[in-house]
Length: 340
Image (tube, rainbow, N blue to C red; front, side, top):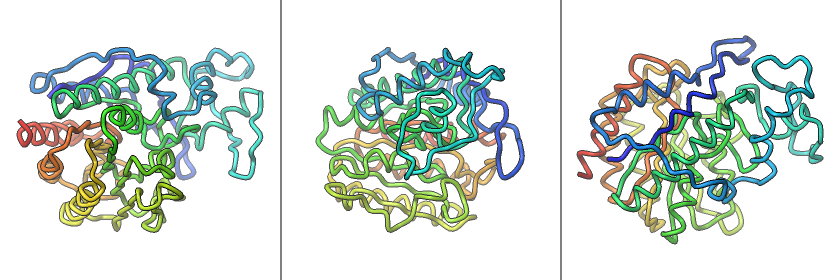
């Protein structure tokens, strides 16, 4: 299959963040990109994306938020203490609705946590990742399948906020691109974390089904969303499905959840599918909470391929460990074999 990537992914390289009371090494480092790329080089056709401009981003993201991501670093002189990144310790709550003008306030307004700093290369990297997602969506419509090596990931990004390492929601951008050709599109998110941003973007829509399979969020990120009773609202009621799993769940319950999710996709009548491909469900992932094996990723790929829909595989999580490249190779090779 065609696999899209962009070396500008390297431009955003956070090295630290505040987690559970301590400053630790940032899991979403630029080193993820070459590891994932090299894992598939030679077996899948690596392609650079076309630049589709801002229109596909603005189809799912708030224009002022996109402008903030683009322009924030150029305003860093407003904060004399800035070194290599801009962060805030002041975050807006839902009842705090006023958009401030000062840069520090805007960072707190448009970000949910300290895992999404603005750095010199952040905009270049996230813009490139979005172009990768769009190009892969176009390729999937032509070939039936494509892989988007998006980095940083995207499924925690809402229409107007960053969080959980994510800035632009690549899976949502890909789904919206598919909607230009199909009346109904589904997103199947198999990342270990709930795709809260994706859920938020489509929660009131009836043309995009969102299904997320993830570790129980009651004691795990993103904490505030991802529960089974979240079904959508207004026209979108019934078009959102969450399948939280007990921490430590391995291949069998994960497969059962995927089968349940694919049944929902079939009932929905989707004409195309986005798979938010998080590899952090792995038993070896440093911040994961599930116990999926490498063979499990291969079997999941075969099962998902059985849906026989034009499918975009969008890279989400999956962090630095020896199993990371093996898991990606296992999934893509199995998916290719099942659809080839």
